[in-house]
Length: 276
Image 1 (cartoon, rainbow, N blue to C red):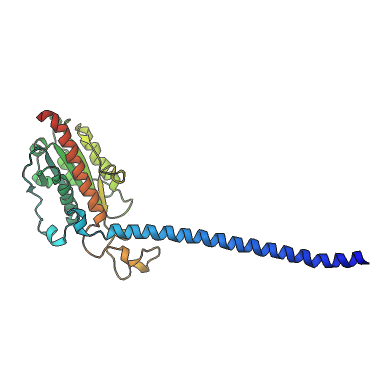
Image 2: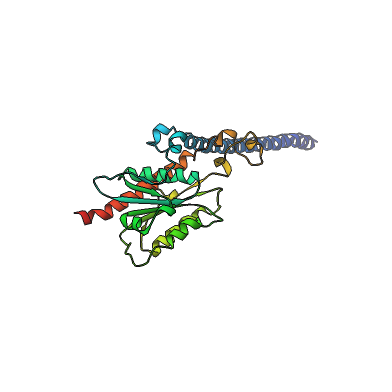
C-alpha cells in the first residue's frame, strides 16, 4: 500500500522535472538563436556602413581624385599635354568612348601626374604610332561593347606595325561598363592581350581588386542613377546607396587614380637605368 502511494507521488515529480528540462532547453535554443541573429545583423550593418563611407568620401580627402562636375566639364578636349617633369617619363593615354569614360580617363591621367606631368590624353582619331613611340607607358581605355573592346580603339591598335620594338614600354588598361558582370574584365584582358602581342610590359592597378586594370560600373545595382522608385524594386538597396548625380562613384575614381600612378611609377623605374 505504501509502495503504491509512493509510486503515484513519483510520477508527477518526474513529469515536472521533464517539463523543466524541456523549458530550459527551449530557452537555451532561443538565446542561441537570438545571439546568432544579433551577430548577423551587426555584421551586415558594418558592411553597409563601410559601403556608404566609400560612396560618400569627401572630395577633399581624395587628393583631387573625385573632381566636381564643373571641373570635369571644362576638360572636354581629349588632346591634353601636361608638360614635362624632371624624370622625363612620358605617359600616353588613349581611349574612345562616352563622357563617363572621358572622366575616368582624366582620373587615370591625374594618377600618372602624381609621378610625371609628361602626359598626353588622346582619342584614337588623333593618335598615331608616333605617339606610341614617344611614350614610355601606354594606357588604353574602352567602354564595354557586348563584352568587347570599342571597335574604334581596336581598329587603331590594328594599325600599329609589328616592326617597332616596344618591349621596354609599360602598359595598362581601363574600362567602363553599364552593369556588373557585363564584360569589363574581358575588355581589360583583351586590351592587355593586344599590348602583350607588341611585347609591352603590362601591369594592373595598385590593389588586388584592380589586378587587370581599373574598371567602373554605371548602370546597375547601387551604381546606377537613383530614382524615387529605385528602392521599391525587389532586392533593391536603400535609397541612400544609389548615386544621385552624374559622377562616377569616388570608389572607382580611386581605382583609376591608382592605375595611372602605378603604370607611371613602373615606367619611371624601367627608364631610370637608361638615364644613369
